[in-house]
Image 1 (tube, rainbow, N blue to C red):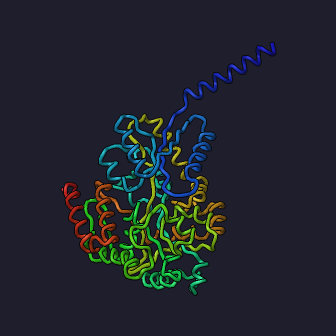
Image 2: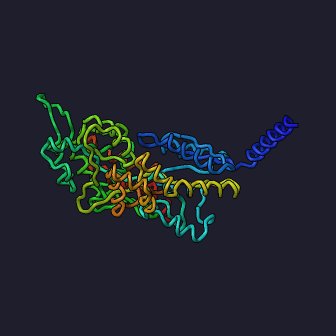
Image 3: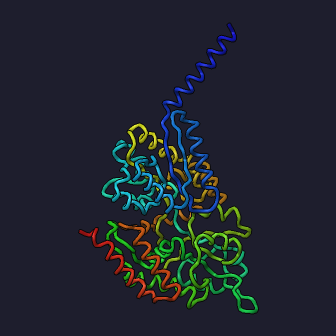
Length: 427
């Protein structure tokens, strides 16, 4: 009898497990990794924790490469009739995703209270790219701004105050000259500053343009302003860091190699994403400083990074399950864990009020720099046919940096090319 009861109980448990599995909602999440560190494992751990707390939901979190790779894969899957439920995509893809009709606005699934307290709780600067036509198309998650990392030990050796990093373009050049070191043969052993000009060259360049009082595009994504005097001056300054001031390596500077180059002492200052903060902070063998980007006419940066996008083509039950996961992932405790693990900026003020974030900023005060920059931040460069228009700008930046064209000619040519692409969207 006892054996019968044991067998019956086991069968019952297996049946319950089977029914639970059968009734589970299966979700698919595509996610990219664009920075160093352990972001992919952190995503996996978060989804596993969510599933442990929500036994009726199964999430297949799929690492899909870079932002560009992830966008391509998500679009291909959606066009083929098998879209993911969620994908973390660059916020600048919003015009393309809307234009293709692949994603849904979140608003129709949320109550007025959720729109006000949850969606409205994210920093405005992080919502700027994906709040369009009165609707929310993306939920901020792995968001960033560029920051300036600097080697305090190198500052001390150069006779500079390590607690007073350059705050203006003029100070940047002055410090860069003292920090650029050469051996007896005249070969540079340490550059003063490093600003990447491959990978995402438009992004640090946009920060220079904003600091010079310029915008690169309009909010509607239909106009660019590449040939404005302030934009041309910004590119001339970018070029002159190498050409005239000789404080940055000549030619195109690689984006991906920038954290390693800074950690290896190839440069005393480096401008790159705050998403690299944890990687750099963990591996730096010197006293690390983090500062806002220097201003010219004003402080300014563009936000960057990815939002959760909600794909069409799924039933309401699974769509609501996907939304519930995103609400959980962006809640203070989980979002704090993600920010600390990666260096991405916590995208809501209430995350910064958690005990773990308070302890973190005590240990890593540089994490506050990107948050404090948000009051000067604008939307990342984004237009219709964004990949095409962005490449036009990237090519112009490269042409000026390698000396194929003057900054003025490169940007005037780029404006003409961008106008030809965007004129269809101005009607």
